[in-house]
Image 1: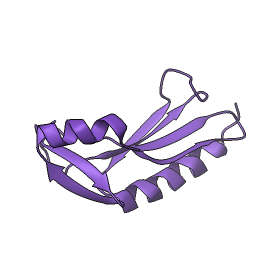
Image 2: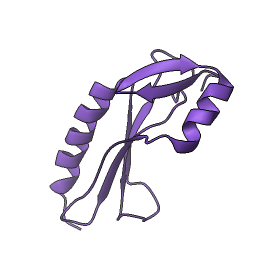
Image 3: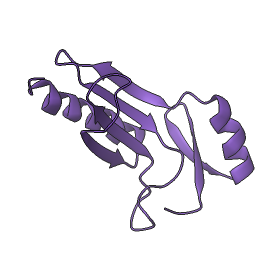
Image 4: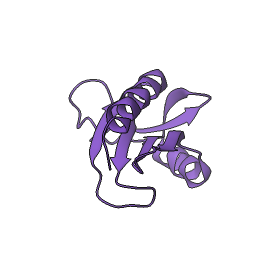
Length: 103
């Protein structure tokens, strides 16, 4: 993870100072997509605001996680992306993968 901070405005990512990021983060809508599948699994894709690539390659700023249920703990799957477009595509792929599985 690096010390860089990012905000999301109209699906575009901008690098900003820590103070700007903190102020933005307090009220930001960081959700890209969320949905509950028929099998009860909850798939959530969000903007993270900090790089989860640990300084190796392009920043990973978006994350899709699958949970046993909405509000459930213990993620079942995860993937990360660099752009909003990749996050949208990744969310769709994760939904397809997990909606095939029974509860």
